[in-house]
Image (cartoon, rainbow, N blue to C red):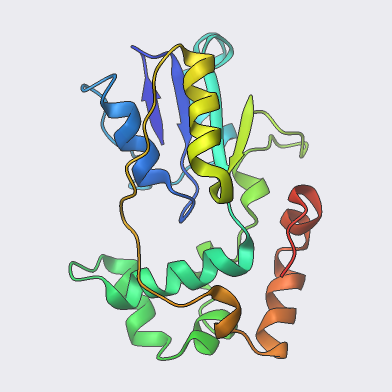
Length: 197
C-alpha cells in the first residue's frame, strides 16, 4: 500500500496488477513515500487501510487500486515466484510446494498459499461488500488508467514497467481442469469486472 500525504492519495496494492510500477510513478511526485507495510504485509485490504489512517484522512484522500484478469494474474504470479533471483518467503514456499503451474493452482491454497485464492474484490471493499475506493483501474489498460488517476490528482503520472516476469500467453498454461478451478475460485472477480478466459 502507498499512503501519500503530498499527493493526497492512497494506493491499494493488489498483487501482480502492476503495483510496483504504480508505486514508482507516485514516488516521483512524493519521494518521501515508501511501500508501506502493515503487520509485515504490503498488500493490505482497503478496509484495513481505512482503519490505519482514520476516517478523516481516508475521506480526504483519493483512493485507488488496479485489478487483473485472474487467469493471467496467476500465471504472472507463479512465474515471478519461480524466476525470482532474490526470492522472498512466499517465492520459496511456491518453489518448494509447486513444481508445476498445475500444483500452484491446485495445492498451494492454504497457509502461506492462501493469498493466491483471495478475490481482488476483497481488497477494495468494506465489510458489507461495497466498494470503498474511488477508482479501480485495470492492468490491461494500466497506462491509460494510471493517466486518469494522474489527472484526478493533478499529476503527470508516467508508467515504468517493473517487476515483470517472462512467460508465454496465459492461456497456454491452462488445462480444462485448472481453467475451471480458477473460474470457480474467482467467480466474484470475474462477474464484477467482466473478465473472460
